Length: 112
Image 1: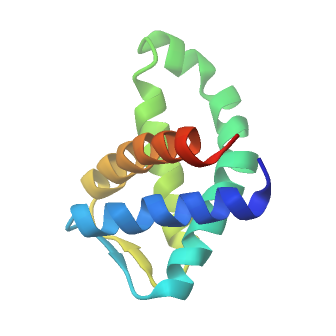
Image 2: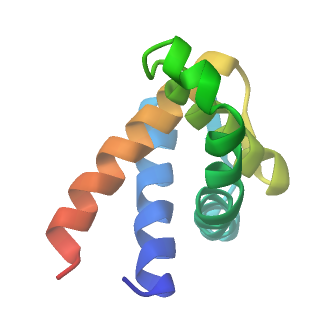
């Protein structure tokens, strides 16, 4: 999958999460694009390193810690982008789950 498609699909899933969840706020189209780009970078570079370091805890919790790790990386993406705000940890948790599910569905639809 090329980067532009990934950024646009991430952007669309974040915009949908913004409409559904009250604790996520986007202040325009440019922050949405930057959030999609930031989420792609965080998931490509930082998340695998965090997964490796937290592997014992993930095994101990039978994989449930991955949900918290997803929320933390989603929050990190929001921290990096001005105009993309997450107000609660619950917003980061449900936003990460929502964007993962919507991103998976969009990838099934739009990617070869």
